[in-house]
Structure formats: C-alpha cells, structure tokens
Length: 281
Image (tube, rainbow, N blue to C red; front, side, top):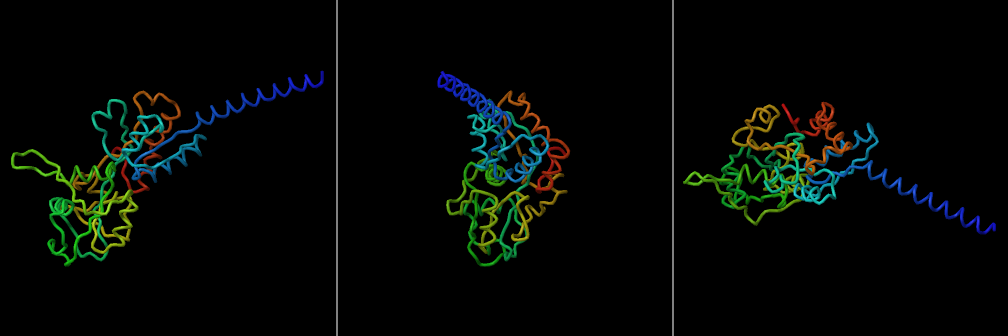
C-alpha cells in the first residue's frame, strides 16, 4: 500500500515538474527577442539590447550575418527582427515591413601613408571596375591599387554599388558597371578597416561609424563625410538603416515595445554615440 502511495506521489511530482518546465520554457520564449542581420547595425543593436533588458527584463539576442541574412531569417521566422543596411526589394516588401531606425554614411578609406586627400565618384567607379589600377593615375605614388571590397549580400556593398557603380549611358539610361574580380573581399566593416590599415596601397569603404585614426578618410567629390554634410545631403554616400519585421508582427507587445524604445529620444541618442545619425533630423 505504501509502495502504491509512493508511486502515485512520484507520478504527481513528475507531472508538476513537467508543468513547471513547460511554463518556464513558455516564459523564456515570451521573454526573448532575436535580432539578426547587418554587421553595420550590430554594435548599436547590442547597446539597445543591454539597456532594454535592464529596463524591462526582456532579453534581446543579437546576431550578425549580413543584411540579406537578416532579411531571410525574418522571413523564415528564425529571427523576430531583421537588421538591414539596405532597402528591401519589391518582392521582399510583400512580406516584411521596414522601420527606419537611423541613417548612416559610407566613408571611402585609404592607408594613412597614402598622400591622396580626395576622390571623385567617377574615379572611384573606375578603380573598383579595374579601369584605374595605379595611384599615379590619380597624381599619387607609383603603386598598384589594391581594392578591398565587401561580400555579396552586404547592405554596405549594395549602397556602394547603387551610389558609385551606376553610370549614365549616352541614351540617358543607367547601367551598373561590374566590379573587378581582383579585389580582397571582407565580411565586415571591421575587417575592411583592418585590411586598409595593413595594406599601404589599398582602398576600401566602411560605415562612417567604424572609422578611426588608423585609416585616412577621403573626401568624395570634394565633400567630407562630416555630420553637417551628411545631414544636409551634400555628402553623396548616405543611406537609411532598417529594422524589419513580418507584416502585422508589430502587434506583438514585446517587439513593439523594443522598437518604440529604439525610436525614443534615449534610443536615438545611443545611435549617435555609435557614429550614426537619428532616423529623423
């Protein structure tokens, strides 16, 4: 009889444990947001996640993977929010909603030893297409140019292609000039900066927020990427930064609350600290 009671009690304990674990798993799932995508946005996403957790207790797991990776993860549901430094295509807009969370600008960078101070969009296009191969063609030193590029699918590369590699033809139509295959390809802003820092004859492009004194920033069309020039629209290499959610998902309270925090004054001050610019002037 005692053995029977003991068996019932153990079964009861097991049932309670299963219910408790189920509740904890449900709570854990309800208390977590996953963000994935653009490596440009990664540092500020991590800052937002840390502050938001301290304020609300909600955990925001942040992952890289590039803009295209973030878009795919959001469409598949493996991420709650996608981070993208490129605009969605028309096909992608059918299932995803764009939220502008800030603005960014690309800086064209060279090694600190390079005497060049400014470059035109036209010359940039020729360099990346393989038409200009030596710095002496731009009144620089007699050294072969080493191009440092971003990987396909990168939002940073997409902006560069859109702003630099499009050329107007004689019939006034535009054509994207293909990039040369001789470039070094890096998978993040940090890697591009490191390559340019180490290779004296190199040139690359990164988000302005990733620049520092280890590389030289070139003027583009004689305009420096200063805050004033970026906000006024005088600097030519500017883009929006996006968070992406599935259509209708902003009705989810925890996601809606996180995005509201990002767009708040405090959230936008954090994006300024990372070298980016608010979503509205």
